[in-house]
Length: 152
Image (tube, rainbow, N blue to C red; front, side, top):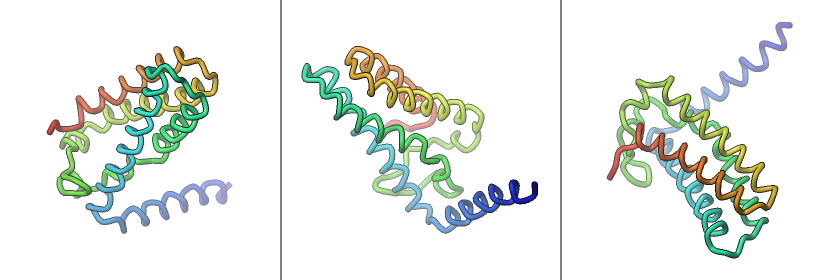
């Protein structure tokens, strides 16, 4: 029984140690890169849905990329000291990210749910269903941006 508890505890400790070694500006760069990569892949899906030339394989690739980043644990990149500073550009994370953890957690869970669903819907090759799911996924992005991302 102890070994079943020890392994997850060790994994969490090692992950925490690794993140503690990331400099604030690196953490900001990593999260900006992740969000930028997801945005590019959402644009790829949108072009396929709205462009009149739906390519199922391209949509699947883009949806899988979004799903992978969404489930990668990017929340760990919101380290103390990353509320201000510069990665590729000045961070636009609002200070309430660190104070409204429950609200942020719900937003992240909603995004992950819709990203996972996008990967499933993409497999169907149904352009209308993909478009509808893209709307749901984009809605979770907008909700989080409205609450936790400063405008330029």
